Image 1 (cartoon, rainbow, N blue to C red):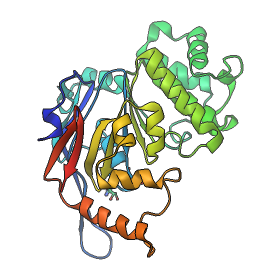
Image 2: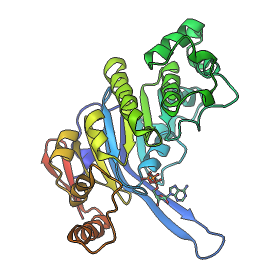
Image 3: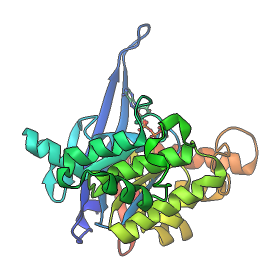
Image 4: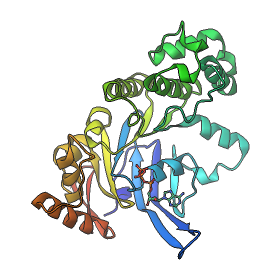
Length: 308
Ligand SMILES: Nc1ncnc2c1ncn2[C@@H]1O[C@H](COP(=O)(O)OP(=O)(O)OP(=O)(O)O)[C@@H](O)[C@H]1O
């Protein structure tokens, strides 16, 4: 069975057999082939969140970058509302897609221009995509929606805001262009622990109240429970388990997902090295999980577990 055979709900986003191979030619030494993604099949239901969970290097960001067309697939397809995004070749289609799908990055500063005020950022987005609603009132309304002070925030520059506030501006910008899907790549991992929860709460509210769909990329499986209806766990470019979050996180069936759960509450705890029983088991699980996926077993409706 393949994951793509089991999903019947209409999806806002669907990845079909997505593969990405990078060919890296270092200055010294032989060329290297990196199989960043291997036959990834995933889908995201409208108005819901899908958490893409995995350790560093598992391929999560590559998935995000292919969705926003920073990378092209080596093979496979990305479907947005049923249409292959590779077919969005005309300018109007590309514009419409870039409006509908917005990415929020780990570093909240990276996508803001330090030379411009928050008003400028939001008005620019509004003018481009909602020219009839680009006035000061619209800027204030959007700032209120992301819980920023609509009285003072418009005149501020990015460096005058905290990391959490800057990330709220990034979400505000996605609202200003009327995005339907947000690809949030580790949106809280550079923020102080104390404000991470409030940014997650904002995403949760935008999903519930605005009906936004969210692909939530994270190494932190515990936060998936808070935000996402569905969770997919990746390791070495493959999806090893996916399904309803309550099931994947609550009763994980794949050895690697169990390993990730065991690392909570500190998911950064090293899963390799050391001589203890846990480290030995971790090494075995990782070795097994790195082998190509042969098939998926359906443990329950929509709950798929890989066999290697
Ligand atoms: N542009 C690139 N050129 C070559 N290799 C790449 C490129 N982008 C990613 N990779 C490789 O692809 C693999 C997956 O990387 P990716 O960034 O998608 O993982 P990740 O799970 O998002 O990790 P992180 O959380 O550290 O970003 C890694 O081995 C990485 O080195």
